Length: 475
Picture 1 (cartoon, helix red, strand yellow):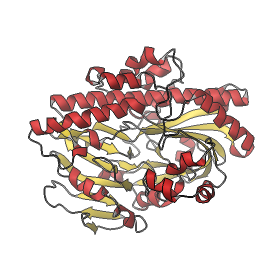
Picture 2 (cartoon, one colour):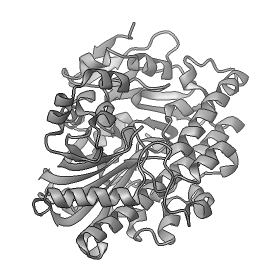
Picture 3 (cartoon, rainbow, N blue to C red):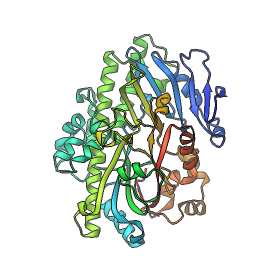
Picture 4 (spheres, rainbow, N blue to C red):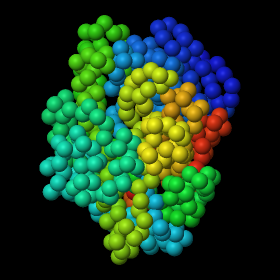
């Protein structure tokens, strides 16, 4: 039976302490989304996380919350310096994240033939689907060890990017503390071949049009203007990060027992953050974080090349400026209310307010862009955070959030429903069945999800983007 939620004002529901919970939970929902959270185990997973040693504040559930492994997807958990670190509270796809590029191309001037040419050309550069290997064979093995320690900066230094790409990436494209010595040989063998690949599942490259700009000042700063084409890239650390999470989800179970920690669910396997096992996981996780930043950077280079090929122009003349790159699955040491804490964000996006020193200098006055992709075929949003988001450790939702499992989506969504939901959006697969698990009908309403936090002042809407064409990889 799911734990009880108690309403605490608009769009806020409290998960009261019970049993071994050290802190309360809080879930941000409206009346449209509230019934959905009672259909899975996400609330129980939040309650389990609240039982871990060192948890502080409240364990938070974002509006896109749904059941995951360990911490629910859309979950945020902070622990003190003498608390724990948990692989299941970061997730399998470490630093799954999103980056957005603007262009100087008007969407109205790109007909179906141009859009089709673009996605076809991008696919020639960027391998898609589970297990696919990168095409930059001349560099990926050579620089693998460098990028896991240096992140996307090293990719740019090798000529695969522009200098200001790095400053427009969360953490400057590199999380400190990475050590490849903490990573298994199996993980390394998977990662060294997959730089510059998209993967499967919910990962995508999407061509979009800026439909509306709500905040003119922030929109101008981000380079977002109505009617212009944008490119959104969503992928992570591929098999490298997945293997690291698998390895440590196993090894942290005996580590927890060794340190006298009672784990409420095997998905929350953990160790004290300052223990040998905890430090090893952090070092390995940071490698995957940096690999993912580098992966999205290399894909960005390839997307720019594809645009240059199709339009027969220098990519720089077409715009293709990076707006920002944000991580979704990560654990980072941050300072909140004067206390150093390890913030685990799983399917959640950092959302710093204007003036916060964690923002890159370019976005200090506005707050960094918070990128929230919708499901395939639906709108995406660009937001900024506010001071009120301090309650959630400056976190916001990372997307729409699933309502159907992949299996249920394939069984229940018809071809007619799928095609109607795509509403003219071009997609790269010849067989619609390959995409049913990612159909819009498998996800929550992105407008409702975004409105939850904007209505209580946690986020400020900047722009709404509409999909025109999407590239997905087959599982």
